Length: 467
Image 1 (cartoon, rainbow, N blue to C red):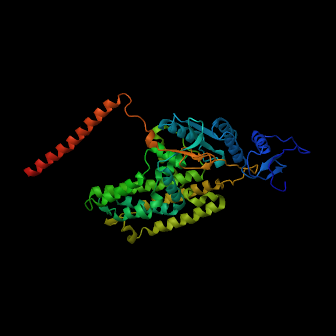
Image 2 (cartoon, rainbow, N blue to C red):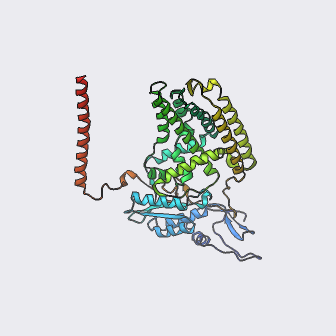
């Protein structure tokens, strides 16, 4: 066709099979002929697929027309149309919204729909809220998950796989100082380095694992399932190094705290590399095994980061020769920097006193670097670039918008949002007793704890006076 049209006619070609009018096309014909919506679109007949292909988002116009026909007061036909477009619809009635329902939806989405081996248009789902008047809204969370999602996306872009690998290799040298005659340096420098300089590489490891390995559909879902939004893992690692700096110089406690802080930091770096490698290799999310799923997913990301560290680099997604060249170049850079870190000027930041024997560390790190590079080279051969927006038939009509504040990760742009605060939908307390009994127990507990603290202070006071 040579220009825009306002209705579609599906003729029968002179040769070839008879064209089949889908339900969506039939609905479009009816709506457009009745002039029930404004706008135009360009459609062309594809002789190869024997069907009409509309180049604009005509499905969105169909959906909006159905909503307008009923003034968004009868959601049944709208939901049926969404299902007809292949979208999984989760419906929450006005009197059924609670934390149990939201967690059930997240668990179902994580187990069935959020598959990294599938393209974005193959994973469309939404959760709708229907009020008592029958109107439909997008159910979203108003708990700050939008800000956390923005910070997480910034870290996805600014994360440096090279810096993470170099940091892991250099930090591993500290474990050569575990003998009694060698002392590691206090954590002043390492706490500053890991807390500020390597902030992007250390941050939100459990969020990365939950989104990329565990298969949670959105940041909002993570905030509901995990129960906390703070980056506790990185804070614990930095706190251990700060605690080591406060210990007596050269003491056993200082060495233990420093090595624990370094080990925790290396685990976080490896998990962040592994979670990104999991996504880039397009592996399916792990199976849900209950409360231990986050721990299981973190271990899986940690092992993946050790076996395929270079697959966590962002530019590895190009695959093929470009990815192999990237592995070779970065492997050479990591090897050179690791050798340079054997200099006394560099190792002075890790230990004090007698020099540490680094021969075993050099052999172990060299072997790991060689084998992990080879595994990444073979893994990169199977990596293919992500598909473009067009599929085999030349038509992708993404009705839903990605939204990290939705428990399922998507929203219908035709509907307004109904934001809820999960704090208003927390579970009940002890279900076996009444509210009055819970209040009585709470008062007794608070009084008992207050008396305990006061008596401990009194005993300390008299002990100090006796001295």
